[in-house]
Image (cartoon, rainbow, N blue to C red; front, side, top):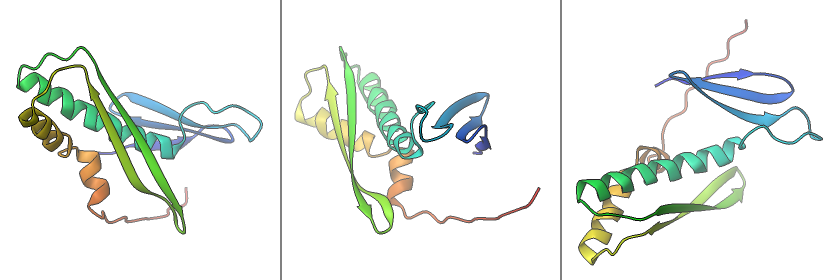
Length: 130
């Protein structure tokens, strides 16, 4: 998996992968942002991944849901600056017995993004001049 990040103007950036793009940042401190901040994109990625897994579980078990909403709240630390806790609330428009609540939770916990974030990944940096 590879994502290319390109600086546009000022502090505006474009992330590209597989023909899709996401914009983030702002021209300067006085202009409105053109998209979510990198931190909010990270939180959105976690929520989206959990939503995909929840949908797969519901479909696989033939559970009709009238709605599905997720809310991800974070707690932050400052030294170093980071998200230190994620609280994920899942609202399902369906009657679920305890077996399906447990199954849905287990499936949501299979999320690639969440597993990556909790797994202490290694970061390798390389700086090249162009």
